[in-house]
Image: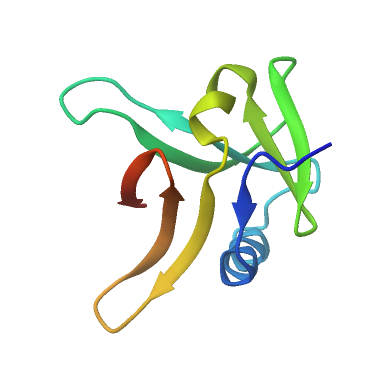
Length: 103
């Protein structure tokens, strides 16, 4: 199955680090989706969760990833990267159809 999104090597390392430091259970997966509405509009969602019937499941860079079917059109083609400098650090969501956001 083709990967719907990309995870850079730096982001994959950061995700694995969070999984270890937060003792994420083995049956949990990385959930990628959208949260939204209201005045702030839509924003990306990253978290760890168990698989639901409405999820599509992928493995990207060895990381099990869940995407709710309804969110798949919003994350298609997106790249999850990791940015770190002296002032801030965090995940960066690069989507060719939506302006850059930091999470």
